[in-house]
Length: 392
Ligand SMILES: Nc1nc2c(ncn2[C@@H]2O[C@H](COP(=O)(O)OP(=O)(O)OP(=O)(O)O)[C@@H](O)[C@H]2O)c(=O)[nH]1
Ligand SMILES: [Mg+2]
Image (cartoon, rainbow, N blue to C red):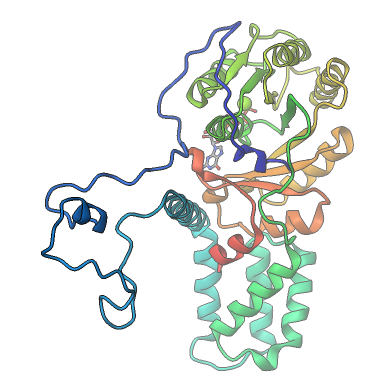
């Protein structure tokens, strides 16, 4: 799924048309680069300053040996490239700790129980493997996947002496089961790029759109959101607040309006206004006799009639706390709509984070993002290596 483009920079300005939205300052994730600050009084002066002031009290020896033990003097004035790299590193450390915090419930259960499994004994036996099996199923890794893992671990049993060995083994097994994909490398190939977001009620569709929109805006993309969940007036209000927060435009109609008509108008507006990305928010439930899936299909048809090739992505949002139920939801949505990617939210609210493995191993749909909290940075592109590192 294509969110590398979120990072690509261009220079769009937000334009407000019908209906007008206010822009909000301080959108998270601004990637402004810091420039080296002037030396304040009392700070060591740079060699350049000293030359300028004809200062003869200090030598200007710049050799790497100057501070002894062969170490180079630490850079007081990092270059813009170094500052940028530093910010990037800080950001990825921040993201990783958020991921780790978000996965803490699952990690606590897995690691504590693995430690307890050994409880002073060395080596691993049948009973311990059975307990491990139970543990993995409890973490929602899924029965089939758990069996595969246990089989492979039992083959390697002679090499597993203690809890740390087992955790390392388990990490390796999980990595072989998870796709080796890193945050997506695809590039936007359509303008506007239309992303339809679907899922049952309460899974986090609207929040996810808000977070994705904010990230896209901070990557200088021009974003428009279609409030095509017209089921509740409050739903329209909620997405309008997120659009405002993210600095995205919004196209909305009144409550109970035809969602396909909202999507149609949004695409028309996006084309007219030279928008980069359109997110279509949809309902998770409908008035009794109307079928949700039929309504979603109608929205999809309408979008592609208005813009051939669109929607370019159909993201299915699943709530991690519903566990295996999410797998059945994905199967249904995939059959009826053709889902291109999954966003798994609320991993922070569950000890069943193993559902990630289940999703990747059972469904043939890429897991593009995971949600580990309610703030914008808590929605992250899924990276299997980081995930396993944060889990065990
Ligand atoms: N802890 C946590 N809460 C989340 C996450 N994602 C969404 N939520 C919360 O889940 C609740 C439901 O989110 P919505 O975005 O309204 O869900 P929805 O799918 O749009 O719901 P409907 O429009 O009613 O179908 C909100 O309280 C969100 O703040 C997450 O990753 N972690
Ligand atoms: Mg919603």
